[in-house]
Amino acid sequence: MEKDQKVKPRWTAVVGFIILLAVTILAAAAVINGIVIFFQAEATLTPQNIVVSNQTSGSLTVSFSTANNSAQAIIDYGNSADDLSKKSFDADAFTEGSTLHYLVLDNLPANSTVYYVIFVNGVKFTNNNIPYQTKTFKIPPTPELPESLTGKLSPTTTNCIIYSHLIQGTATSTSQTTLSSTNGTFILDLNAFKNKTSEEKFVASAETKLLVMAICPDKSRAGYMGSVTTDVGTLPLSQNFPVAEYSTTLTSLPGVTQATITPTTFISPTATATLIPVSPTIRPSITPISSGTVSPTPAVVLPNTDIDDSSQIIYGLFFVLLGFFLRRRIFLGKRKLLN
Figure (cartoon, rainbow, N blue to C red):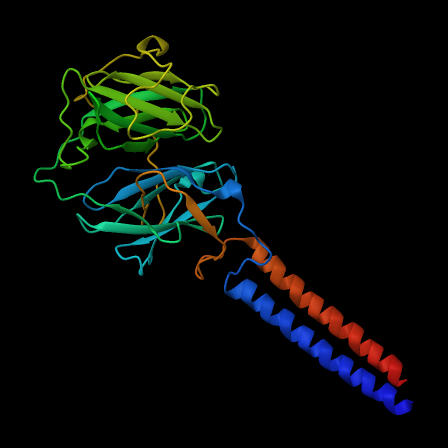
């Protein structure tokens, strides 16, 4: 009987050692490799209304929204689906978490395909398990000087995304996006709009219309349909704006007419703008973009270099403490049996 009592603690010690080793490995994986344990992708993190804009020969912008108002976004991108080594981070206005996300992808070669994947709070989103794709434009033969149009959102004390494009009949130009300043002012460059096919400047005429739509983090929105020869004026923000999402193919904004706009003093589009918005400063290389409507596919793998979720460290410490607790209980039990 005494022999059996000595053998039992020995097997208990082996089991305890195995448990301690297992939790230590899990803790190391959580802290060092950035693996999110027991974490499932939330539907509220899924990128919605992904818009590719501001396409030039060397850069472009990707913007989208999320239902989660505490979301932070990162984009990994490159010119090969197998080499997404460049990174773009949310505009500074949204780095603390937001429903809006605005990322610039730069340092890109002209007239090339761009591949990218989106991470929201560490959760990876792709286009049906493959990277999103878009492209940069060819180098223009003659750079155009800016022709500025100004506008203002009211009331607002935060940065909002301003979407815009030109309309000629049923044809629309490429999209231009910018961030308003915290006081609502913004500037558009009339010469930044391009023909989607030729990639040349979109030539405006007396019949050309400008469409502007603003979306703010609190989901308030505003819109404008007007001439390219006058400033946008002041746009009243509303939670009940009739259009929910911006699209590069919009040729009208139902419910929005000139009568709903309260214009400010108009200036020539070639004049120097007097309203200066706060330019969004983007950390390291900037924003990949996607065209068309896509259905993001969530995954739960974080990049090894991006550990921005404190829950990983908490899980790691929890497993380490659990291991030591079990070890202490096991060996105390062993001593009692031996005594």
